[in-house]
Amino acid sequence: MPLPTALVTFFYLSNLVAGLSLLFVRKSDTSTTLAWLLVFVFLPYVGFILYFFFGSRAKYRILTRRYALSRDSLGRIPFTPSTPSELLSECARRNLDLININANGAGSTYTQDNLCELLPSAREKYDRMFAEIENARESINVLYFIIKTHDKSGRDFISLLAKKARQGVHVRLIYDTFGYLRARRADFRELIEAGGAVYGYLPSFLRTALEANYRMHRKIVVIDGRVAYTGGINIGDDYLGLDLVRTPWRDTSVRITGPAVRDIQLRFVEDWVYIDRQTHILGRKSSIETENELRLLFPPLEKTGDMGVQIISSGPDSEESYTRDSYQRMISTADRYVYIQTPYFVPDEALMHTLRLAAHAGVDVRIMIPGIPDKRFVYYVTTSYIGELLKCGIRVFVHAGFLHAKTFVLDDEVASIGSTNFDNRSFDLDFEMNAMIFDCGFAKTCRDTFLRDMGDCVEMTLEQYETRTRLTRLREGFWRLVAPLV
Image 1 (cartoon, helix red, strand yellow):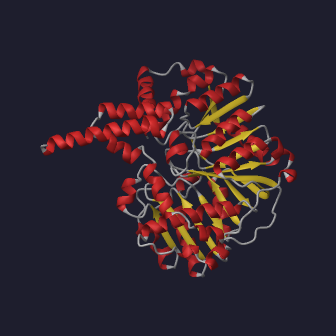
Image 2: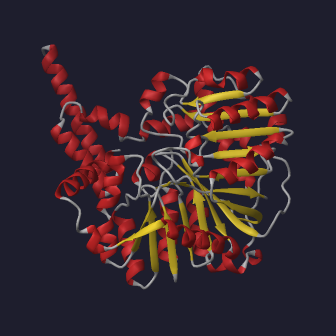
Image 3: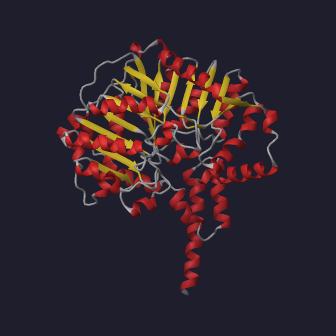
């Protein structure tokens, strides 16, 4: 067979196999399946290549098994038993089904003895976190999607970590190489020369190319194994509201102490080992897995409060989208209200159906989105759904600036603060982490914060929505069609 004919035959058959795999093996939601099938039809000889790089998760699951934290190391990490049902707070008992979904799906341990503090601005987070890093004595573990190394905030952060490394504190840092494209390893030289360890996700050009569509979107800081920060806030001046275009900037994080810190620390250790083993392909055991280091990272944790917490992680290595499942269950569980803040609103069919059912059942459903987008094409997808929400009685609030917070709160009982956006990318393609908090006082604080934020919003009406230009509607339709691919 002539070479050109052989190549054409190979690409055609590969395209066919990819399409059949999508239909009968992967079992994606309808919109994602349809979008990829259109790619295979209109790009018949390169569609499977695009699918391999941007659609298939099989290669990542193979890598995860190969580079995962060893069972021996996992066995040396102190296990935190889940709080017995008879000791649950009244708030937690009323939401036991939600706790069970997170436990049986995501493997999330429920612990009762935590203290969680809502930090509704980067200034509040930076002030608290920088001060606690300054007082760190043993270890500092950091993972951010974005560290803007050319901003004052980024430079100050790296300098502070370097200072602690020079004092003998064990400092480890992970940043996503695509989160801030201007970041270079040289930007972390001060920290590295001080003895800190720094990894970009991912560590090599080849692996970054193979996994370019999967981003490390988590935000984690754990200090001395006893204090943890997570949420939506990265490191950069724009999070302080200093961006001249996307301002005001509204974001949220949470500070956690108590037994739940162990699960956040474990998530960091697993991510670190995964990257470390890819960096050292000959199989050198990560220094983080030594008995002494694990003992340092996982000290005994005492009771600091009475708030129930579950840490929920998901990513392309997960069999299911656990954060998406928790969001859907929260919406369906709500009796009185559910308030959602998200910068990107791209729900699948099941989530839209669940939102409509909640609204028809009389639940007060409110969704807050940004008025100033950071990604125009995603914003068109977001606005394409607003009409459907308004028609079923869901209230939509458009913030005056850029809303980057990813928060849920329902019925003055349960709140979720994390890195997960309300979109396909966060649910299926990015590595995410949320803290779900079962406490009436904390939920009321989140509720009051949402109501206060409404003062910086304009409520969208169906009449206003229908005045969109024809060009805007065409853009919305196009980007909504391709949204499942990106």
